[in-house]
Length: 427
Ligand SMILES: [Zn+2]
Image 1: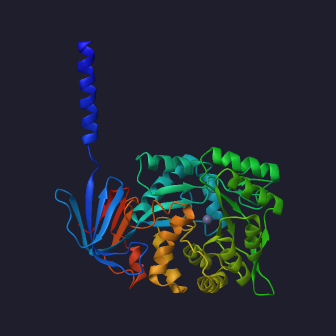
Image 2: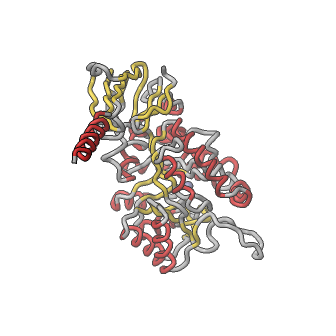
Image 3: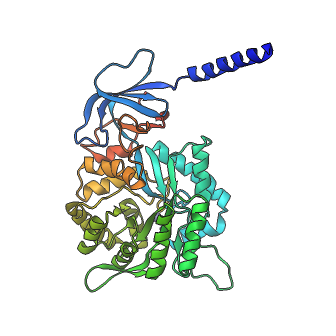
């Protein structure tokens, strides 16, 4: 009896010791704070962080005694950036040969190692969350990278993954090889309604946070001057896969470049249009009515257009025109780069910002695409996308003024995710 009592006392003391380990408290002094919500930056702000969360944001004020202070008083602090369209398992694909080589000559484990490296690069450039829109033939390796990041094995952004994506037979690479060869595909091949239902369930069961499908291919300008395309899925197939994804709690992203592919994706009821270069006035109105997000991926288009030639350079002008109209109509535009479509080691994803400003946004509007709007697209508005009490402490800093020069965001000097500092060049 007595021994049991002693044991109980020991347990109580052990519990007290654990609860006494209060979460780490950090204060950040921000010279200027762009919080993701306000139109104007706040000068000399004090951000108090406890563990992984922000507990208070005040203009001025002094840090509580005994709290570690990070001095960013000569910098501009912003919410961590969110890229809503990436491919961590891809290393650039200007030409079909670049793409085929990766699927034919690199094993999935090798590609996953590069993906972990890419996740680290993204985080060090200020991207604290990413929606990775399919593995391009690397099966479910995105789920593994996400798991390794979440378990703290490798540094990287919060990942929202789409796994394999879908297209029908003959409409997505690898294509053009001898029929005698059984070559890999960049997507899960899906034909027919039953097959679409199965693919959605299979992908979700293996960890897909999002479902992605390719709505079109073969982009061409018609006599009407509109960018058209060949639609991949029959209407009943696309509808089935979107409905099934929604039924089991997943949102759907559609790759749709030409007007026909965009219209078909909107008919099917998707949640986000990826690329959307051929958006017409009528389709832009439908985006607004259906509350669908547009993820423009301007950086990748600028990167691949010169090398691909053909219609691609003209498509940049088409996108610029659509972007201006989308702004006037109030379309929800979320930041997405298609990183992986350009090599992770060559460009920072933050390059995307300069195109949005060039195409008509103010710098603060461009910043919102990668913060509040992208968080809303992910359904994570209550957790990330702005610097305010209760949100995760995901934040970045640059030394200049991004409202005067948006390209400052291409030179991130400080990165914190979940209250942990991953980069600080401002010490
Ligand atoms: Zn993509």
